[in-house]
Length: 185
Ligand code: S3P
Image (cartoon, rainbow, N blue to C red; front, side):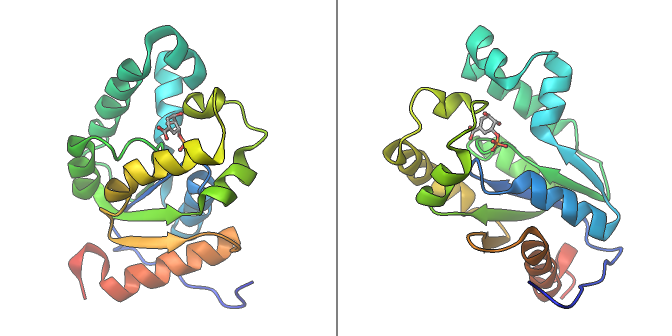
């Protein structure tokens, strides 16, 4: 565990967390927002709030294409936001237009974990429609492999395995300072 504390700064710009399901985007996002005194926004939560039904239900009733359309529209509606930490759903990076919006919004941080670790973290979860029918290591590996180029389109990539949420937040803040948030070296 880290024994020091990276202080918040006011010129970080928005911070966007991307990554496969189970990489810790929500836990890390909430902690990061607290540390920076930023607003925390969860894109999946916005989708659920607007639809009035769960993500499982959206997929079952309307299909993945309909889910992706809501996801893209709500993501786009965040343009102009400031002082925000945004967690995105694991598939939000697939659409090129979404990735363009993410870059426009701020610094993109991709959280990474090995497929074996993802399986361990999600083995008792039933709210991931893309894994509900097949939660095998092979399925997770295939999805990660397909999405890898999209996850790689990030300012910073952080391996999360074996690290605490606080430690990951420290790493993110250090990386952002190093590369210079908002392009300020
Ligand atoms: C998805 C990930 C989920 C949610 C939806 C689709 C994906 O979000 O958006 O089930 O395609 O990887 P989390 O990454 O927060 O689980």
